[in-house]
Length: 310
Image (tube, rainbow, N blue to C red; front, side):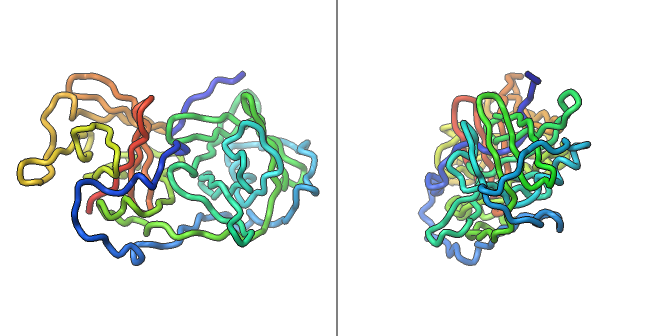
């Protein structure tokens, strides 16, 4: 069995309902004006066939010749025909955008396909060469990865994937996908963002600079916290700080040795937090774009959600 590593991504289980804000008696914000429909981007050729599971084709076609070709084939709307021990068990299908971001699809009350967004529902597909075959590794925000050996039909309109202990199969569809409103792209709303649904978890395969840029600034906790006695985080360059409240209620950087330190970034995976004592905290981190929120896990604890402060 080929070895695999956990890429940065998102599929960690979290409850957005718990993201109700922290220690604030401010009147509720009018959230309606902060909502927008998040729309994934697709290649113009991604939706060219409309199959049903009864019309699923044998997945005996040639394999992808490159990672780019594999991702091009996966781009589109897919109906789930079968699955076993898969992240998509129970889903109506999956939508995979041109960057490899994957959204579970469900049937709403009207029977229409609906995109399911958020840290718990978005994941990423990334190509990985195993021997002479290109595999797709599906990654989640908790650090877990599903290495998928994918085979296509000759028309590329049916695909089947097999992974340790599971498998699933999909057919291409041109059915329209409805999008529930989420926060607006780029909005840094502080505590007001905690109760808004998020989308556009970024990025599928981050560069070091992209990841560092996305983390910069201050973040306020939405409910449960990474540090029980700290209300937020600040990322400044290569440094990180837990944020506390002083006697006046202002946010200040913690001076405790285990509440600040440096970040170590690596391409294609989540950064590692080191405390000023030199202790390492491997912490899967994911950032959404709409609105800007952060999910951080501490293996065995969390995940914890924070909203970006303006």
